[in-house]
Length: 407
Image 1 (tube, rainbow, N blue to C red):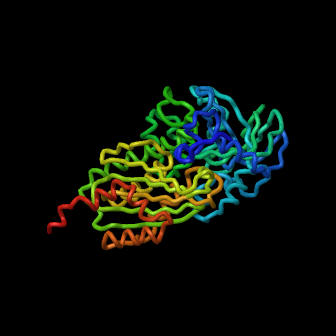
Image 2: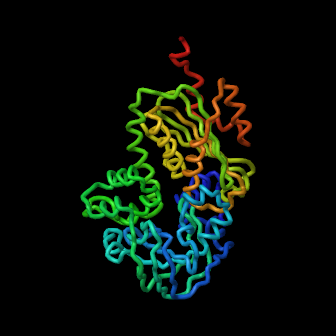
């Protein structure tokens, strides 16, 4: 494998291609070390979980993965981040569930998403109930599992001769209505979100070209759609958060741990702005050649401008904005993330979103002084104060005297 700076790998996470190579050498090496468990033939019958993925290479000609778990007693569980997070599924179980999915692939023009609607493939992918499907493959796929730094792992796949939807899809009613309405994609995503449709279903619908003005609809690569939906929904809520005349009245700290990832979320009285501080410990998938931890930062200013684009930050930012939106209050925030070697397989950024949500649903610790905050962060993280010192929000909050200190 070429020698690549580990810091570049922690920023890239296999999908930005920052090293200039056509494929990530770490993921290429890693995928061949994990065997998929599905029993595979050229004819696969099963119920869609639902699970689909839209690739990005060759755009506007894109590869569509339609995955089913043969002979599964609980097909939906193979693509259900909400249940995985709620029940705290361990990493090996999630990897095993993804490995047992078999995908038939189609090559389609991204400008013609109606093909998937006409064949009911798109409706099956967003169905509330599982849907019987038959996938006829051109040849038996290699029983391997492929990983990505942003999306969920993809099991064995092969070009599909035909995909048949033999059951009756039941998409959420608000979504079914929007498919036939003249509503812009941003507004449609917000309508679905406020109607209680989960963000993973919204992302699939967005990716499969089911949302937006019919003349403008496109198939959107799954990687792009994940960050796009996080951004669209957060943006709607952020309008009210920024305008709020009320700010939180004390420092609040929330913590949660899952899948070898520790999160510490700090909310500070003040205007909306935030920092994302990631510390990758030496020995993780992306830092095997590193001698010590590597820290990556993203800063968002009061106008919502970020100094770099990062899908993990956008996934973590959404639940913070959700939290402030529900409280009808403003705050500055710092999200600290430590990643340990036990997070040995990337399974997508859904776990970032759900772990931050879980943290913010718990009672906060409220430090009374700066020293209290620093002691708490040091007790909760391995890197400790170095994480806080990387935060522009933290430095500004404690350096600038606030008006209320004079009263």
